[in-house]
Every structure is written in structure tokens, then in C-alpha cells.
Length: 362
Image (cartoon, rainbow, N blue to C red; front, top):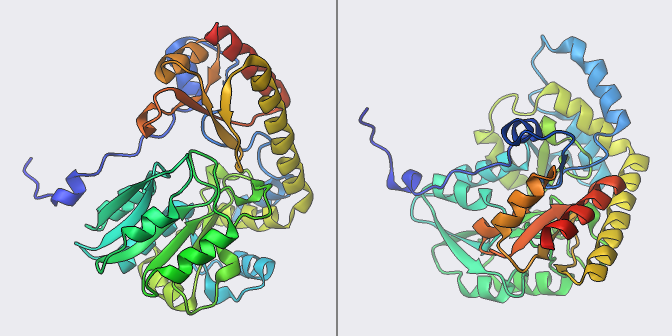
């Protein structure tokens, strides 16, 4: 087959998701495994979300609300915004794709931190634009370094706060200085997929800086704290002008009816959200204490995951842990060959992880 494919498409390295737990169990001949590799919510979905989804199942013969009216209303009221500031996506990943589709042209430049969420670079390349990658400094996003890479060809900047995979955050003062120093026409996209887990009150939140004049977009998701990763539902908060552009390229019915129903209910389930956040924070404290006792270096986080320096080949540790039924993430592909990343699980899962790691490192 002879296809004429643009070079910028051929330059994309496909995103490789973690394998499903069931597939890994079949491949390695193990059972009763635990997965701490994908930053998922160990408590599952909100009970209120489950009830709302069950109620909506009987209407699956109907197309979903293409405007997402009810969910957008709830999101806008939650943040004290207007519905015109909100765009729904099939996960916040889709919002990234809408932004690059609507606002970038071949030859444009986009400044990205490295490493960070891989979909930023993939979507930028998909639009024929050039990703300009700025290395982290001490695992944190280097805002000064990113500012220095902005040129007349720069159209967009991506920030992940807290950053995936490092768990570091951007503080308010640094964020405000950054916004003041970059050209006003450069679109700043702040991905806050893990913002609900932040403990440090100095952490910036892009939503606080929305004024409908600055091109600032904040991404949020129901996948993590709200436990709805399987439904793929996220949203963007942005100036009305940018939202209207995204709605020109948005696929019809991009947010399915079960996702809209579940997300709307989850947003109202404040008790469940608090339970999730408490579990994550308590789990982090337990894991930190356990690693301190073992003398293993780790990097404190503002998310529900964190990095651990195992001081040996991370891929080898991944394999050894897997054979004990504990699925973690090696950071070799991110440029950290001696680091692993785990997310907080249930307490019994955290205990099992520590026991498996102790055995592995001995």
C-alpha cells in the first residue's frame, strides 16, 4: 500500500498505555494482582455516579445531549462561571486535541515541559506544529526556561500542575510572574488532572485567572479523584472566544450519555470526594514512612502518585514486582532509568507494595 503521509505524522511515537490488569495476569500466569501503575482511583466511582449511570442506561437508544447542557451547568455553577466558559471532552485528552486542531498551523511552535503528559507532544505534532521541549529542573517545571524558549512562532504553552510523572507543582507567585512575562497572544494551557489531591495551599490554579481576555485554558478531568476513568469525561475552562472556536471542531455527541450523567452526580458527591482525598493523603504518609524505614529515596508529591528511586534498573524492578502480582510503572521511557512511579492504593495494597518492594530490593 502506498500512502502519502505527512512527515509530521510519521514523527509521532504512538502513546503506549499500560496493559489491562487481566491481560498481564494471563501473560505472566499470576492472579490476585494489584495495579498501582495508572494513577487510578482505588475506591472506584462515586456511589451517586453509579446510581445516576444505572438510571441512564435505559435511554441508550437515544443520542446524548450534544450540548452537554446539564453537566456544563453544574460545572459552571461549581466554579462560579458562565456555561459559555466550559467545553466538554471525551477525557481532557480530547480538549487538548481540539485546542491543537483549532489554534495551530504547520510550522507553529508549542513550548512543553519534559517529561510531562505524553499527549501534549502527540497532539502538537498531529497539527504539524513543532514541540519545543524544556527539561525539568529538580523534577519541577522550569517556567523561566520555558519563557526563554518563546519566540515569534510560539502559539501555545502547556503546563501540567501538578506535573505527571513527577508530582511537583507550580506556585501562585511563579505562575503569575510567568503570565506577566509571556506575549498576550500565546495560549497557556494548564492541565490540572490531579489538582484535587494538592495539599500545598501555594499551588496555583488556572481557573482563578480566567478573565475572558487572557488566552488561558484550564483542563480538568473526572478520571482521577472522581473515579470515572472508564467513562472518559473531562472538560476545559476557558475564555468564551476560545470555547466558541473549540465548539466549531468538536465532534457531535463527543461526551456520551452515561459519562454526562455519572460526572454530574459525581460532582455533587462531596462526601465521596473527601473520602478519596483522605485515603490518598493517608496512603502517601504511610508509604513515605515505610520507605524512610527502608532507607529508600522518594520524591514527595502533590498528586496521588509519586516517584521512587530504586537505585537499580527500573525495568528489572518492574518485572520482579510484576511476578509478585504488583503492577507499577518504570520511568525508563521518561528518562529516569532508576525510578519507578506508583499511585496510592487501598491500605492493604500499599502494604503489599511495600512488602514486595522490600523483597525485590534485597
